Amino acid sequence: MITLSISKINKRKTELIKTNTTADNPVMINGEPIKEVESFVYLGSIIDGQGGSDRDVKARLGKARGAFVMLKKIWSSKEISQRTKLRIFNSNVKSVLLYGCETWRTTETMLGKIQIFVNTCLRRILNIRWTDRIRNEDLWQRADQKPAAQQILRRKWGWIGHTLRKPASSITRQALKWNPQGKRKRGRPRNSWRRDTEAEINRQGKTWSQIERAAQDRVGWRIVVDGLCSPGGS
Image (cartoon, rainbow, N blue to C red; front, side):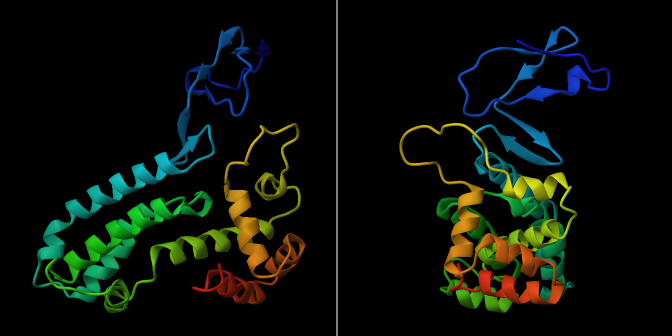
């Protein structure tokens, strides 16, 4: 049993996630147990005990779909230009969809679902029927859009650069390099945001130390991000 005696923690607003542990000892605050959960919402994002992003992405898709439906009169309006509609889509729908994407552990299946939703919205805005055959690349060009996977990657590396420019004492910066101690389970390790990030760095022939140094120069960092986020860069 772990007992905490802290007056500033609100027990009713506190939830506990246990990750990769078989320990069942309760954690107590002032003699009362903290509720254990599999996931919880923090700053609008769903934190999963397994470190995955599937629940958060599913929630984001639901919220973005709701935002798109609420604006259906705008999409069908003949008095609003397509250019204006696309600007509204970017600010009111896509911003909801990609909120918190900087820390998503992405998979091909996840990216496919996101792209299908975006393509569906773009076809509606551009008044392209399902019977009209059009390549995805042509659709994105007409809508002045980049593939969702590329946008997520660029936002991720933009956030990493911002974090690496924080003081060394910053908890956020320390978390990027944190290496959990202890033995891991046998078998192939689960894919993670950290492993994806390291793989992207390796494909560019760079090291984490080089990335840290490059991030200190904002102009040079943009060049690094362009390389990491180019179609053939990751």
